[in-house]
View 1 (cartoon, helix red, strand yellow):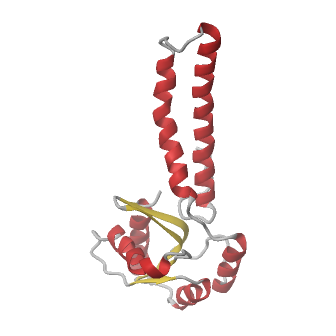
View 2 (cartoon, helix red, strand yellow):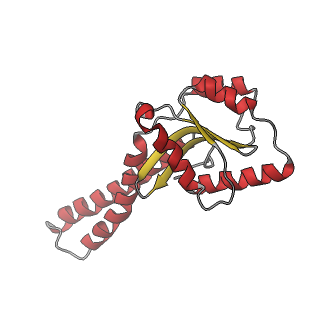
View 3 (tube, helix red, strand yellow):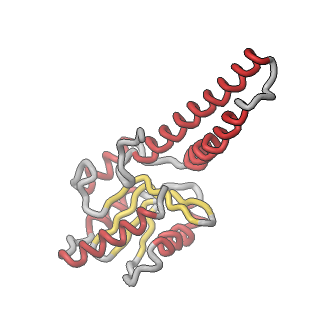
Length: 195
């Protein structure tokens, strides 16, 4: 609705959170308006109009919870993004297979990846999280689950610093047409599991 960034573009998570917060605030204002106007007009909330306020609580909860869940994730700063794209020699998401602000959602919860690159049969991911050391294997497993039903077995490497991630992405050679098509398919599978 408001979000001009596509899933995987730099700034997507910020735009996604802003959209969810704005919709939540609008719905909360509508609920409050209905309740206050009923109190002012009728002196109580025991009228049929309260049903509208009650019905608005479900979409409010949905959007507010989406905002709460994603509020804890920290995307790359503009400086980090510029540094990464400068190291790769590309700008404006022109790097084939490189995505940013990826929140993989599964039944167990959510994992945030600052960047994921699928290129020439390899997957590299950047995770700048405090719990990286403890959960490194889990971050890798979540990507494996996202592409589990694919017949292709891509090696996954997780990095926790921008320099080594950029070095790895830059070292991956340009794929041929067939491999590029498979890479695109794998990247779409990962993207569909993201919020």
